[in-house]
Each structure stands twice: as C-alpha cells, then as structure tokens.
Amino acid sequence: MTTLGSRFAAAIAGRDRAGMLTLLGEDLDFKALTPGRLWEADSSAGVDGVVFDHWFEETDRVTGVAHVDEGEVGDTQRVGYRFDLQCADGPYVVEQQAYYRALDERIVHLRIVCSGFRAR
Image (cartoon, rainbow, N blue to C red):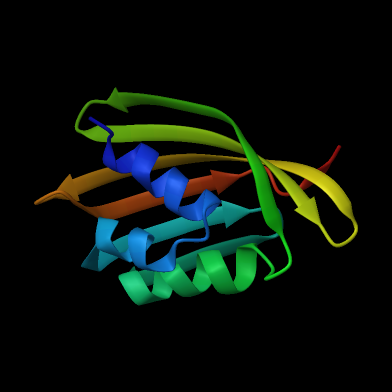
C-alpha cells in the first residue's frame, strides 16, 4: 500500500495533474517555501497552479526519482523526495520536504520546503 505522500510525489514526478488533484481536498491549507518565495493556496486548484504552472516549466522533465522517505511527526505525515531533472539549460536535482495532514484520505493541510533546482 502506498501512502498519500508517496502518491503525491509520484504525481509531481509524472506531471500528473489529475492524479495530484485526486489526493488533495477541495479546501486545504497550503503553504510552501522555495528559494526566494513563499507560496500559499486555499484550494486544490491553487496548489495545482503553483506546482505545475510555476515550479516546473513545461520543458522540465523528471528523469528519475532519486529518493523518497516517509515518516510521521505526531498527527502529521512527512514525505521527502528528490528528483533528477533535465531542463532546457542542463541537468538539475531538486528536493522537497512535505508535511501533511489528511481527512477522508485527502490531504487538507500541506507544508512544503524546497531546495530549489540545483545544478548537477
């Protein structure tokens, strides 16, 4: 059985917008920190826009999922994932740590910290 966190990471890696949306509650509390910006959204559509319209360019390709690690902190689940990327200007690696809470098998509270794209 896979967790919501690992399915969330797989949806991002596979650029699976519909798959990611099925994991998110309609109303959710989302905040994320990337180098240089704080992101916030209060809906699944808002998270979709952040992840697929801002974080990853259309030409960015995940060439490998280098690492996925999961755990829990009290009532909060954690998933960390690292992707190998091929971008228009070369190869990169990016890592994100996500903390989430779920209700009825959908993520309703999500916090993400991102390393930013780091050149290989």
